[in-house]
Image 1 (cartoon, rainbow, N blue to C red):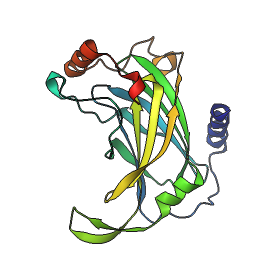
Image 2 (cartoon, one colour):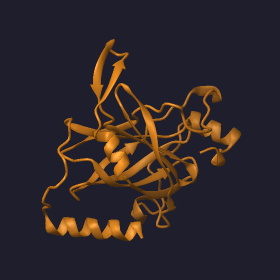
Image 3 (cartoon, rainbow, N blue to C red):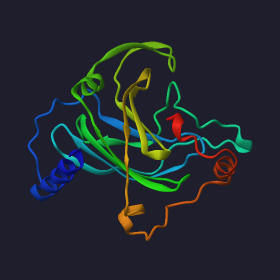
Image 4 (tube, rainbow, N blue to C red):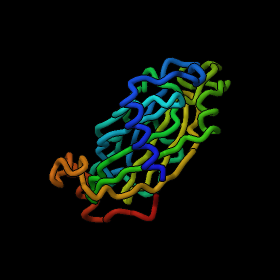
Amino acid sequence: MIKTRFITLLTGLVMSGCVSGFGKPLPYDAWFIGFFAPSYMEVWIETADVVDIDERVYRQAMSGFASIRTPPENLGDPKGWPNRPGMGAGKHVIGAKIPRLIYVRWQSLAEPQTYDVYFEIPQPVRDLMMEPTKTFCNADGKWITDYRKMLTIGLAPGGIAKAWVGGPCLAPIEVARVKGKIVTRGPYLGEMNGVYAAKLRPESQAYVDKFGIPFDSW
């Protein structure tokens, strides 16, 4: 099982304290991991842990609220995924090489429910993140060499998670869709006695109250 292998890996690396490197150096300073949620479907990320290709573990590479839009008067539409998602709310994973495995545990506040999910990053996706690409950048009106150094993950109710890789001037490419599992112990693995990190904003609560949650759209 992926989950068992991941937990074993984390335990072994923490106990060992160091790992010898064997991955290629990055052609950029750091890669970015970001998160977003469909409109009104607010998400609190308890942890996003990364294992890179050198088998080094980066715990809580990201935590906190995912990026989201909550326009008033139910003017937003949470159904489906955007054609071109942005980078999301996140952080640069400094010191890491290309990711091999990503674990995310999050609270879907619209339900509410706690989920976790594992993304195994296959070699073709890692190749995409290392490949230089000539592109015209609208931001400065120049042709540049860019890299897909942004990994964006969308988190939706029902435990659905989808991932894209993109660059500042490169269109994102969808690379994975995974259905997570319910964390039966609840928020923060039971440490919060069932209390979630936050309540929905009034705009989000108003949408859910009127239209419900479009589970089948993600």
